[in-house]
Amino acid sequence: MLKRTLEPELMDTLEDARQYNRMDHADVNRQFVDDLIAFGDRCQADGYDGLPTDIADLGTGTALIPIELCRRLDSIRVMAVDDAVQMLDLAIYNIEAACLRERITLAKGDAKALVFDDELFDTAISNSLIHHSPDPQLCFAEMHRVTAAGGILFVRDLVRPESDTKAQQLVQQYASGATQYCQRLFLESFHAALTIDEVQKIVGDLGYDPQTVSMSSDRHWTWSAVRP
Image (cartoon, helix red, strand yellow):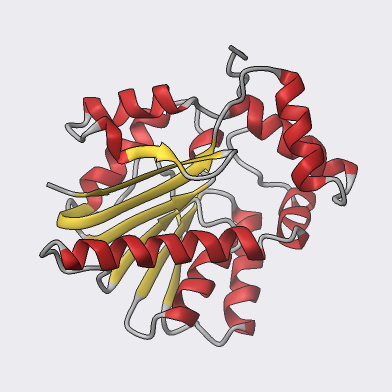
């Protein structure tokens, strides 16, 4: 198995933020939102509230997922959190351009040590945050802490492949048209990602069923659970 190799925790240079914002995330973000809404619908069918109003998005980057989510659902508000100032600067522009300033609030914060009160949010979500963290278990613990009982936890990230060869194949399959800079970042992200077994161990230690973590594509795992 490919050993985990950490990458920088923050993408906080202007070049990092600009390159990230220029990448075509539309399909991935749309699928994330589709799957989040579908999970909320299933929760509602099981007697829970479904996808509620107040959502925390951790590692929001340039706020593309909160924008997609607000366009799809009129009832929600999002606290979009990131620790990278350059990302948040571009997020301000994106939110203004989408005319969503009244529904998306930006906050600078470390996902491993959030300033928010316990059980403040109805839902906590994250996409592609975990592979950046040197202490991913702290991120999971914080998401659990700030989510209210009966609320939704929905987290997605890359899966670390079994070899560098496989990682490079995935980069060519999904980013062959991207710049060399973006391809390098993508490859480094695979090396920094967790395996599904590692994620299942973390959520199991928090008291969740490890089977709430599953493969959701050939390169992603997803944790979808209801907070006890």
